[in-house]
Length: 137
Image (cartoon, rainbow, N blue to C red):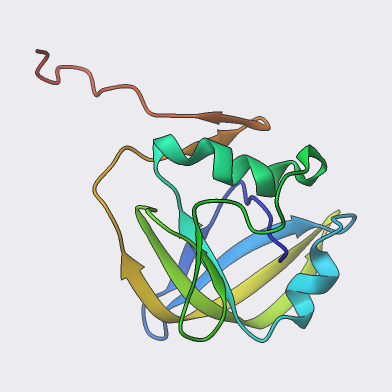
């Protein structure tokens, strides 16, 4: 099972449902991403940093299929318990500087649980602070 942590995913089109992301050209995961007929993208919750870290830092080791991974009916691995995600396929790519920019089409979009999001900033995981003026207990 192969995976990676993306620093950003952006919507490119509502119809068809397209999104874009980039991967460094020196990434060890680039060839497997290009070869995959379908893949999943997850938007993890703040409490899923351990599962996400396995993909951000593959040298950490651990089981080949970490806890928190389930399989879609198509056989594609997905992060269970995430805020949302998609099963997708690549439709285009181009080199942009030292990265490959990919365009993917979502074949299936799913929503998960309502939880604070997990962010990946500066090669570290983080969460959002409560909004200014938010009610406090």
